[in-house]
Length: 604
Ligand code: ADP
Image (cartoon, rainbow, N blue to C red; front, side):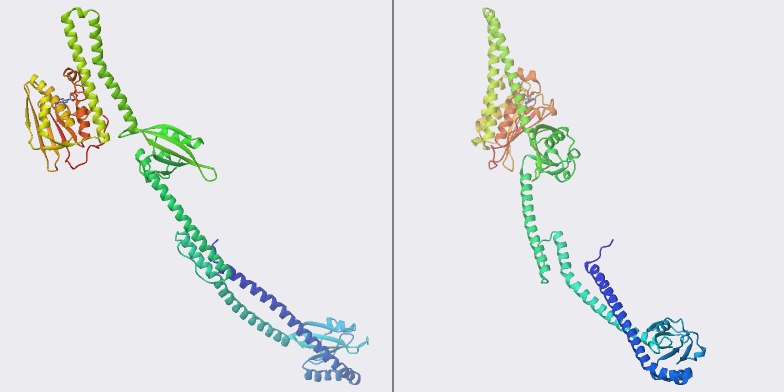
């Protein structure tokens, strides 16, 4: 049902009450007035009958019915009243309006019967003689005489009714006027009372729309003013609370956004209530897309789903590992779940905190791999040494030729062992220096470093009769740790000599570019390296041709050392090579004013 405005609910009811009261009052008053008039007419007729009784009695006695009839007519004219004299048998003896002989018997008229019984008869009805509504009063002509005829007086009620109708009309008009004035006044009053309610309604609409700054300002009645004041206070408190909630919400968002741990809050139906940026990053989803969707819908991972289920079910919380298989590789998460409760202690959901341990796991794997590699690399020469020592102990020492050969092999393996350990120490130092930023760089001549490296590798160069050319400006300087940078050049030159055929050429060149960076290249024309190995040759113990590397005394650590030393200097090493085309290794050192030595290490 359509709801009406308050004023249209009150106003018609008010008008209805007013109308019914007026009608009831008019009905009672007009009834009373009509009754009063009838009573008046009756007593007036009774008075007239009292005056008429004597003269008519006399006329009847002296002149009979003819004289009585004549007197009746005269007296009626004087008093504008109809008089009828009726005998005991009901026959009309005299009548002021008609010929008595022509009139019917009146013995059965109720007023006549009452008068015949000695009382005063009264009636109101339509006259069969005159055909109009009349009021009749009848009395015995002589009271106390049972043989007395009855004298009746009658008045037409038309005059009476006209008078009563005038009163009715007057009352109706007055009532209508009262109704109109009262309705208009009540409408005005209603409007006056409901106007502040309309203002309040408009203002509460604004409050509901979040505009809590506005206030109700009017002076009306005590109650309305108090109500407005109450609404204003409520809006003020609401505003204050909303600000607090919004501030806390922002703080919470800021905290969640700045967390490195992923946070996922779900409700009891597994719908995501909150998911921070770190969690979105870890799960590789859009932060905004997840809101309101179920966890399973957002990320199809059984372990995470089970974690959410246990967090929702167990009040003590739970822990577990979650592995996500992503395009970029597996991501390992450590997850902790806890139940979420509201202020009343009722469970409203759960929160799962994710810690990305992928890097740690990778480092752990690398460490394990490294230890296995180192053990393997060390075991080979040690096993060889042990074998030959046992052979010597078992009697080979007596055979001087064999003993000398075995001792040479033992010395070679011991040297190899020493080389591996030395390289490992060097690698570890390079890593540590890079990590701690402990490099003490100084200006050093590139040409000087190159010459020193050539000196170090002179034995192998001579052995393989390789021509090493150098193209390096004498005045080219770099800011570096000289011993480490020399080691870099030695490792690159040593590889170039190792993997070049005898009597070949190795070219070393150095240049600086417009930015001030220095590029040092070591080029050989050896076997070259297939592209699929380019990324891996800088890993520790990675070799393209394991047997050849061992045979040539390689430890598999040379390029890893180069890479880490370059990283410690904020530089880099690249390779350009193809099978049968030779290889060019380039190291790039940044300009002197570029901060270096604190470059992040990768641990392979
Ligand atoms: P190694 O001690 O075995 O030389 P490195 O770390 O120095 O170890 O080199 C890793 C691998 O890269 C080598 O085993 C070799 O297969 C390849 N390599 C390095 N330098 C060259 C080069 N100049 N020519 C061809 N292959 C090379």
